[in-house]
Image (cartoon, rainbow, N blue to C red; front, side, top):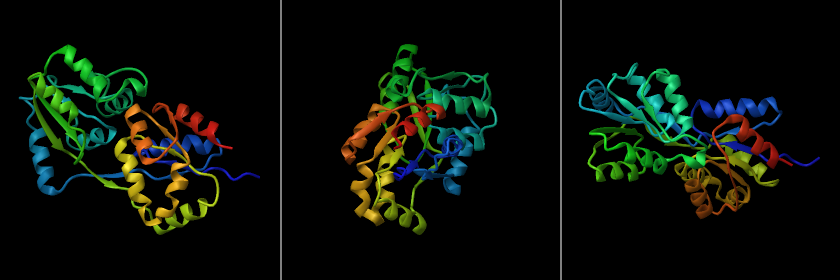
Length: 258
């Protein structure tokens, strides 16, 4: 009987557990390796965030680029003022926003598959809509500056604020043992959903660096051409692009199993 390829799920947050549940119903076991653990910033930074989010009269638009930013913002904001328009980069995060604050919140996002989403797709919408006067861009401690820079180029006053801290994945001794044993068999299928998560993967396996080739010989299932390019730079050759829908992702993973 052929060994099953290990299935590694790296999406942060509860979405990872939901996908794992879908796969488990089909008899597919997986390793849950969320690329990042999300934590609130230190007390001093939390106080600054609280003060800013308590005073939004001068803000026209709030951009929440990821589910993690939504979860963090929901810690402080129970309901957005009526004058605020929210924006995000794709349908997946838009669904998380609706779940957090309801269907009546004003929300802008690019519709369509993951390939039609991202900062560039949101920028096209905002560019044609016209420059918002002041934008609050809520994210983790690092992130692309591209979208804030584009907004500033058309006259928006953009305030970028860190509202959560991403702590990269660190493998436990048990997980290191699992990957060393698995490296004697078929290479893994890895669901990975951001360019930063690619870096987090190689950060995590650095104590067992001898498995790097085994990892990159596997299948990477991802969301966006930008992530594809980063995976290629990291040495992956078999890369598939899908979406955030659990059933669709599960079908990709199932098709790649022996």
